[in-house]
Structures are given as C-alpha cells and as structure tokens.
Image 1 (spheres, one colour):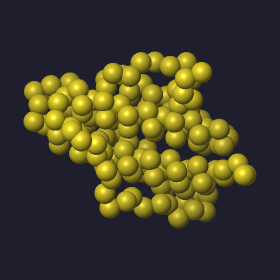
Image 2 (cartoon, one colour; image 1 turned 60 degrees about the horizontal axis):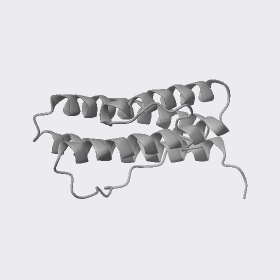
Image 3 (cartoon, helix red, strand yellow; image 1 turned 45 degrees about the vertical axis):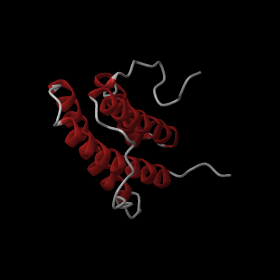
Length: 144
C-alpha cells in the first residue's frame, strides 16, 4: 500500500470539514433549545472555524490540481441529542475526528502546506476544550 499523496490527504481533510460543518450546524440547532449559552457560543465558534478552514482547503486542493470533493447531501447524527451533555459529547467527537484528519495531513505535507496544517490541527485541538476535551501532547495521534 502506498503512502497517501498530498492531494488525497487534502481531499480527506476537506471531506472531514464538510461533515463537521453539517454536524455542528445541526448541533447548534439542537443547542438553541437549551439555556446553556456557553455551549451555543462554542458551537458557533467551532462552526465558523470549520467553514473558514473548509474554504481554505477548497483553494488548496485546486492549487495542487485536484477537483475539490463535494459535501454529501446529509450526514448521520447519533441519537439521542437532547441534553446539553449529549450535544457537547457529539461536538467533541467531531472535533477529535478533525484533529486526527489534520494530523494525517501534517504527515504528508511540507513547507507552507504543513505550516497551515499544523496551525489547523492546533486550532481544532484547542477547540475541543469547550466540549470537554483535554490537552494532549500529540493531538490526533491517539493514546500512546
């Protein structure tokens, strides 16, 4: 099995961002029924960050000759998502998934692309904290 190319890693990261945007948007809708404003604010901040990175990834994919992967029509949400704790747990799962994807992008990139991927990885990893995530020495690489 050969190592993934930069364009493949960018496409996988873009696909992860599409999913994150969909799920975080849905979670924001679910959180609107709750009085926990810190959760709603954290979801809005995460959503905005993922939209920005998604747009940057589209440009990056095109700049290396790829055709940016489109979003799926819909993504599956777990059930139930009725309590603030359930919503936060799903948001944490989404953020951790993106961190793992960014770690894979860092591994195959170099120069400015790697610097951008590292910054995105760090931003996303820090974005786990409002949802109950804890700092990790090597985010995205799992438990060692």
